[in-house]
Length: 157
Image 1 (cartoon, rainbow, N blue to C red):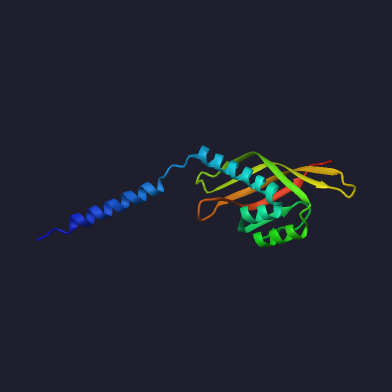
Image 2 (image 1 turned 180 degrees about the vertical axis):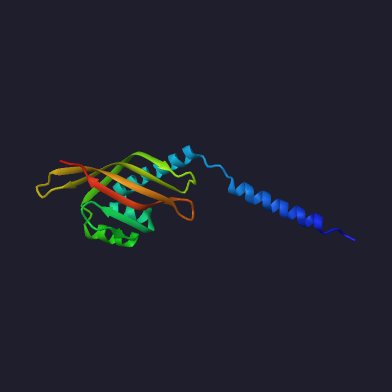
């Protein structure tokens, strides 16, 4: 007669090992932070090349929240995109991250930095304004960094 306990115990032991190793996967925090900064810089480059509205549509989570200075919050990527389209496309928005951090779980983080808004006034003269921004990031189901909260404010003149 065959002893069924040994294969069952072996199977359960292997399941336990697999689950334990998956849960204890060590996160390379430097690599995650580099990835987050790289994504933030790519987001800015995409904004310069394709317009801010298209960049925000591409890099924001569907449930994103925008907290614009002096205005009410804007809820949802589609609403943020619509409001940016309504504002026009006669400006260039770029930014550069200065610092940030990634959570110990490696699935959330933030970046903050300096943005530049460049535009042309009625006389044809080029103008620019600078400010600060803070983006809270979250990884999507594919593991890509996406903005969940965007906020910024203009520097004093």
